[in-house]
Image 1 (cartoon, rainbow, N blue to C red):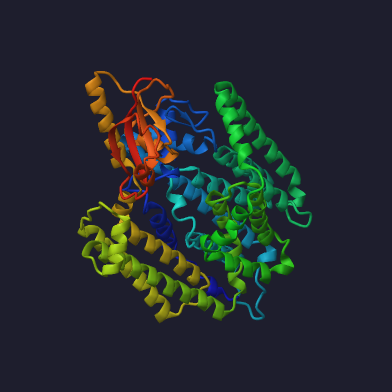
Image 2: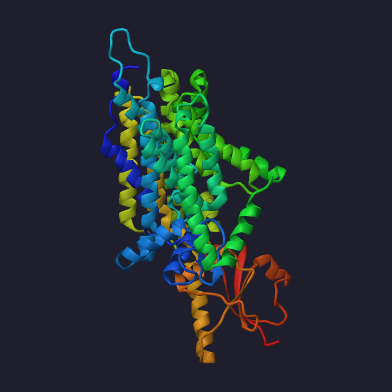
Length: 566
């Protein structure tokens, strides 16, 4: 490898990509179902004194699952900035922090591993090889760019949920172990924070992947074996933090802790065969394009498999792999944990790739994202101008009731974004750069610019389809009319109401539900098919005061019912 292949990626470009990636999608929309709005509802519940700060609630409903870390941080930000920017935007400031922790942990962890002797390229006979610092920076930049290029985590990182916090804790554990190789005390402290944070963000399903990764990292032939007493110290410190929360929460709300223990117990167990095979179907697209590069890195570095720069990322991959078979319903909250270690591992594949393979990555990025950008524009034309006709009909079926409004400033901004992509394509084709980060940069830029286009051109339509705000306002208005007629505040019960609409009603309108069976008013969630068949509950005795749905939802229906006194 020559020094020219590790020319420094401009910091402005790197930071601009990261900033555009995370900020786009945080503004100008409501919290969406389900995890997004549930996270906001728990933060607001803590601020309003319903359930306290030790345990998570949605109004009067005890949400006895996961942990309180995301609620703590988001609620604190709302209390400080909510009066300035609004509760929704203030809660999403937490996403910026979790994202910064994730990227910085991945970058510095890969940088430290890339500077180690085992990872260095062979010295050239007449000199000209990259310096240790330049080589480590190249790998760190590539790992960060490859994470930004990963498809599956894009939406999850923009949710006001426990997932961004969980990813951040996982990445911090990776950096802590890499740091422990040369600064054991600092690494042990960071590892204690990461382990306790993983538990307080997602309870046992969140803690197990980190614990397994730490155990795998302590391979006798790995560089961490000599630091095992520092790892033990970190585990003890994390255990003390977890025990402190457990004790305080048990004293404050023992019923919540009992329900939380039951949730953790039911989450663990052998999944059914169909569920166990689901990751084989979902992970290839979820982890694209980093998993092929990670597999290539394993093959190319197979003789140095126990070297820290390979074994540490492998340990975190194995930690998640070992967790999947013991969870009854593994899904995206587990899949996202693959991204950080696979991105670090994929970065170490770049120095081993031949020129033809690297060019293949470049051409894949150019062709793939040119097509996706064109598709976003074609869909926008179909939405606003009904061309092409068939695509317009398909979009209309998904957005029933939506009336598109043509605003020119997002269109102009989208045109600028498209020109940025065209400039990158010209840069690659005309100048034929030899830097190794070009392929990962094109992938990250392509996904980021596509995401920006979606936000600029499609966000109002997506918000209409996925937001419960209009439905929540209708329910609030119907309840206000009932209260006016009765002359007193109205109680409300729920029947079949799932977590997403319940959290939305609380977050948007402050509506809480009672468990008193004497309350005559019931908000019922049912389906259009059940209504047509007459098989919904209370169909014979209830008076329907209001009926509606969420945006363009073609299946679920909601009814406000008055039940006669028994």
